[in-house]
Image 1 (cartoon, rainbow, N blue to C red):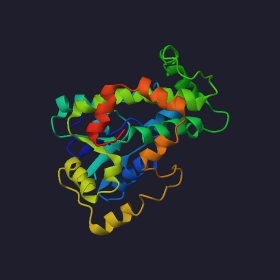
Image 2: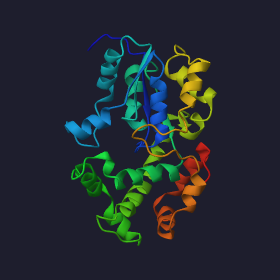
Image 3: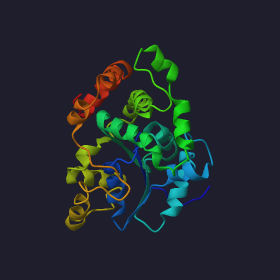
Length: 270
């Protein structure tokens, strides 16, 4: 095992970004600092090279060593969004507090909007290439949803079955609570410079500061979608108001009370 120091390595976890501009903004904002290197390509790499199944991730301890070596010349090197928070619990046992990570959460209505839209747009795959979407269909909990008496669907009704599966994943986000108070609302981070710098301070052991000019630059990107990004969304109330009755009923039946309580504890209104 390499003796490369690893205290400059950090992770940012989430439950999927699905082309959401604000998730892309946060990763790009980190990368805007010359002393931070952010690796954002692990999920894209798997999609094309198929070195493992879509649900698998690299061993987090070995991946930490990889990042440490990759970012030797930087004050901080990190990975954004390749992992779920619970998958990094092994790092605390292996490295104690040397490797830090935070989890980024999004309002469930808005998160679901991008989750469904990503699948309806064929997940940015070329025309005729449906492998990733076919995989999503195979892992969807069809039997469970049928038992709930929800609106029926066929494989072509992507907006329906993806909504149900996304709601099921909202329940899985309960695992984010296991990392304590290291959950940050993406909407707040995108509006609060002190919150953003506080995350940087924590992840980099106070080694990296964003000066006012750089903060002005990255916060000027918040409301302007990048190339390849979807539109910017902050208003979860408007999103919910646009839902048809079948979708509201599904949310009430699929998403657990425990999950709803967690989102409220994060500061969201449902």
